[in-house]
Image (spheres, rainbow, N blue to C red):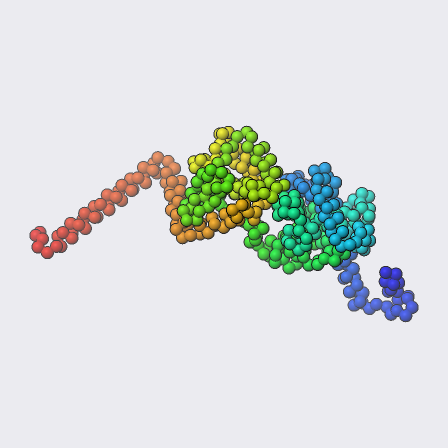
Length: 434
């Protein structure tokens, strides 16, 4: 390092035995310095006038990443899991935390400049680098375990597991909750792990890393679309499935959840909505977050499926007619909200499977395949035609009378034509006298 400083000091042409750098060499150094020490992008706070429109959309619920939300009371419970990740990564590398700090200090200036609204008084270099290491280790362990790159955690781990991914993922895609990829790459380099694994964090197929995770996700979304097992488009609601001749059948319990592709029966357990439903089901959701049992997975799949099926009061009415939903509150709009709250409180269970190998994705794939069959598409066409007929023709008594009169007239005309043809054929028969 001392030699490098001496060489840089000779760059003005005053050093002995050292020729001045030409314009091309100066340009190269300037470009490299700009890329490594002066990031053109910044991680910024969302402007207040934008945030006030929907403040919850910009606030992390479980984990803070970076300095902006670090230390907030509602996020403190995650700090113990960050420490677990840091201890595991550091110990596995056979280095000490001070070794990490010493090497991370080499890029501290660049990392600090990555945040547009950093409080310099609050964040000294030592405290800031400590945070970069803590959050960076968490991200490395969190994604690497899920994608199977490094040593796995237990299947029922509340954070470092498939279930944990569903609970934390949304927080990692918030603009104020980002870590520069430079910090993560540096940590991977120090620990002796492959820095290229970052490109697989968001989704397979991402070739270019952005400045941080949200930018990479946005770039992948624009270039690759949303076709992925982790980012599956939502399925059809109950009233839409009904148009495709999907029949709803009430099952005895939650283990009966199934779709029969042969007869189109979607079997679901009964849901009784009363004043205790939200509290009870949200607490069962919370239990499912900390359990890896088949029971917890079955419930999570059911809650996820229920949230897809119910979008409006039309779906409530349909499921009520089949005995699947019993609304003791007598409020269909309220029933929709109850179900949306239940579905929103569970973890992302698209690929979680129950004891019979059923998952939310497998159910949706069966339903999608059934709805694409020619006969079911024709069934939907007829339903839509009848529905449109009712809306446009039977809106008032006069149009109804006119329509029925037209049907009667058409029937009489057809009957008259039929008898006229029969009479003509009879006259044309041989031996018929006129």
